[in-house]
Image (cartoon, rainbow, N blue to C red; front, side, top):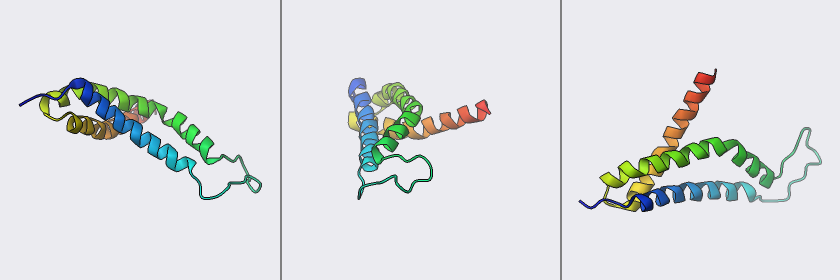
Length: 110
Protein backbone atom coordinates (compact mmCIF):
# COMPACT_ATOMS: atom_id res chain seq x y z
CA UNK A 1 0.00 0.00 0.00
CA UNK A 2 1.37 3.40 -0.99
CA UNK A 3 1.54 6.14 1.65
CA UNK A 4 0.04 9.56 1.11
CA UNK A 5 2.37 12.56 1.15
CA UNK A 6 2.57 14.33 4.52
CA UNK A 7 2.77 17.76 2.88
CA UNK A 8 -0.23 17.15 0.65
CA UNK A 9 -2.23 15.69 3.53
CA UNK A 10 -1.48 18.71 5.74
CA UNK A 11 -2.30 21.14 2.95
CA UNK A 12 -5.63 19.45 2.23
CA UNK A 13 -6.54 19.55 5.94
CA UNK A 14 -5.54 23.19 6.27
CA UNK A 15 -7.37 23.97 3.03
CA UNK A 16 -10.58 22.58 4.50
CA UNK A 17 -10.19 24.77 7.58
CA UNK A 18 -9.61 27.86 5.45
CA UNK A 19 -12.58 27.00 3.23
CA UNK A 20 -14.97 26.59 6.15
CA UNK A 21 -13.79 29.77 7.91
CA UNK A 22 -14.05 31.76 4.67
CA UNK A 23 -17.57 30.41 4.06
CA UNK A 24 -18.68 31.37 7.57
CA UNK A 25 -17.22 34.87 7.19
CA UNK A 26 -18.80 35.31 3.75
CA UNK A 27 -22.17 34.18 5.09
CA UNK A 28 -21.91 36.56 8.05
CA UNK A 29 -20.89 39.56 5.95
CA UNK A 30 -23.68 39.18 3.42
CA UNK A 31 -26.86 40.82 4.53
CA UNK A 32 -30.26 41.03 2.92
CA UNK A 33 -30.64 44.74 3.50
CA UNK A 34 -29.00 47.77 4.98
CA UNK A 35 -28.58 47.67 8.71
CA UNK A 36 -29.16 50.80 10.69
CA UNK A 37 -28.22 51.34 14.29
CA UNK A 38 -30.78 54.11 14.83
CA UNK A 39 -33.03 52.06 17.09
CA UNK A 40 -30.29 50.11 18.89
CA UNK A 41 -30.53 50.28 22.67
CA UNK A 42 -26.92 49.18 23.15
CA UNK A 43 -23.92 48.87 20.89
CA UNK A 44 -24.57 47.85 17.32
CA UNK A 45 -22.30 45.97 14.92
CA UNK A 46 -22.47 45.72 11.17
CA UNK A 47 -22.21 42.17 9.79
CA UNK A 48 -18.59 42.83 8.78
CA UNK A 49 -17.67 44.05 12.26
CA UNK A 50 -19.42 41.05 13.82
CA UNK A 51 -17.46 38.70 11.52
CA UNK A 52 -14.16 40.30 12.53
CA UNK A 53 -15.08 40.13 16.21
CA UNK A 54 -16.12 36.50 15.85
CA UNK A 55 -12.87 35.66 14.08
CA UNK A 56 -10.87 37.33 16.84
CA UNK A 57 -12.77 35.43 19.53
CA UNK A 58 -12.45 32.13 17.67
CA UNK A 59 -8.73 32.52 16.92
CA UNK A 60 -7.52 30.29 19.83
CA UNK A 61 -9.77 27.46 18.64
CA UNK A 62 -8.64 27.99 15.04
CA UNK A 63 -4.99 27.89 16.12
CA UNK A 64 -5.65 24.66 18.02
CA UNK A 65 -7.30 23.13 14.94
CA UNK A 66 -4.34 24.13 12.76
CA UNK A 67 -1.90 22.52 15.19
CA UNK A 68 -4.03 19.37 15.42
CA UNK A 69 -4.20 19.08 11.61
CA UNK A 70 -0.42 19.45 11.30
CA UNK A 71 0.19 16.87 14.04
CA UNK A 72 -2.34 14.33 12.75
CA UNK A 73 -1.29 14.65 9.11
CA UNK A 74 1.71 12.38 9.67
CA UNK A 75 -0.11 9.37 11.15
CA UNK A 76 -3.03 9.71 8.74
CA UNK A 77 -0.69 10.00 5.73
CA UNK A 78 1.13 6.82 6.77
CA UNK A 79 -2.07 4.80 7.16
CA UNK A 80 -4.10 6.01 4.19
CA UNK A 81 -3.11 5.81 0.52
CA UNK A 82 -4.99 8.94 -0.56
CA UNK A 83 -3.76 12.37 0.51
CA UNK A 84 -7.13 14.09 -0.08
CA UNK A 85 -8.87 11.47 2.07
CA UNK A 86 -6.21 11.67 4.79
CA UNK A 87 -6.31 15.49 4.79
CA UNK A 88 -10.09 15.57 4.94
CA UNK A 89 -10.09 13.15 7.85
CA UNK A 90 -7.50 15.23 9.73
CA UNK A 91 -9.73 18.30 9.36
CA UNK A 92 -12.80 16.33 10.47
CA UNK A 93 -10.98 14.94 13.52
CA UNK A 94 -9.49 18.35 14.41
CA UNK A 95 -12.91 19.91 15.09
CA UNK A 96 -14.07 17.67 17.96
CA UNK A 97 -10.55 17.37 19.39
CA UNK A 98 -10.19 21.18 19.50
CA UNK A 99 -13.67 21.41 21.04
CA UNK A 100 -12.74 18.85 23.69
CA UNK A 101 -9.50 20.70 24.44
CA UNK A 102 -11.44 23.97 24.74
CA UNK A 103 -13.87 22.33 27.14
CA UNK A 104 -10.99 20.90 29.14
CA UNK A 105 -9.40 24.35 29.40
CA UNK A 106 -12.69 25.80 30.62
CA UNK A 107 -13.08 23.06 33.25
CA UNK A 108 -9.49 23.37 34.49
CA UNK A 109 -9.62 27.19 34.54
CA UNK A 110 -12.72 27.08 36.68
